[in-house]
Amino acid sequence: MLDLQGKTVLVTGASRGIGAAIAGQAAKAGARVLVHASSPGAAIEAVAASIGAPASDVICEDLSLADAGFRLFDRALGASGKIDGVVNNAGIYIESFLGGARADWTASWMKTHAVNVQAPADVCHAAIDHFRETGGGIVVNVASRAGHRGDSIDGAAYAASKGAVLAMTKTFARQLAAENMLFYAIAPGWVETRMAPKDIEARSKAVSEIPLGRVADPEEVAAMCVFLLTGACASATGATFDINGASYVR
Image (cartoon, rainbow, N blue to C red; front, side):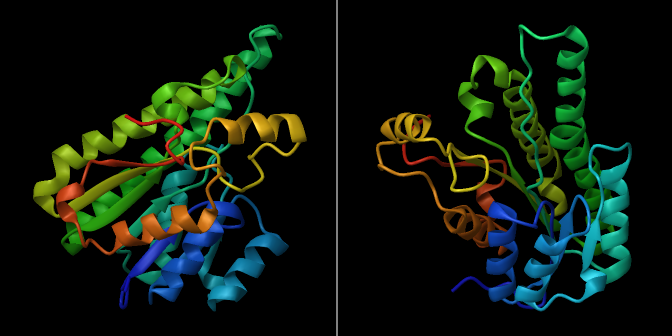
């Protein structure tokens, strides 16, 4: 049984999809879960209610803004006093069209980097500072299959951002393991969320490339994430866990 009794975990991007599933399973495992969303709304309120989190454990920050990752962690720490684990799940996908205006290209890359790379990096920075004071902790960064194999021609910014997350995770794992800080990455393929293809033709093509025959369920990603948060396999620090139905095997 997954056991997070007595632990406090911060989950970013928890209003729906993978983040909501992680929050739910972490709470079921006994953790106090601080949930983040980009802005207030019914979705994050529903997630908080489902796990019994008070309003003070709901933190809203627009991660595209400068220093938002630092503010997010500091506010979470202010609410809880101690954080044992962090899940950097929040992310965006913005197409970066080669055939579009250069200003749009630049804007898409900048915003993708801000949310998908800079914000989780800043959360990691703040978490590392905190973990050094408390004796250690665990970070799980949610990346993507695209960070390994690339994406569509218009998804270069997204793929590059997730590749950066993987490299960041490995670096922190290698350099901080001796300080009892563990870092893991999860690289999902298609998951049954808003980002999964919905139209029949695209859906059929996506599924045809998955040997398992279906896209992953958010609960599957959450189960792996919660297992890693338990620290049950510390020697796996630095590893990336692929959840893609064998559609990309390294």
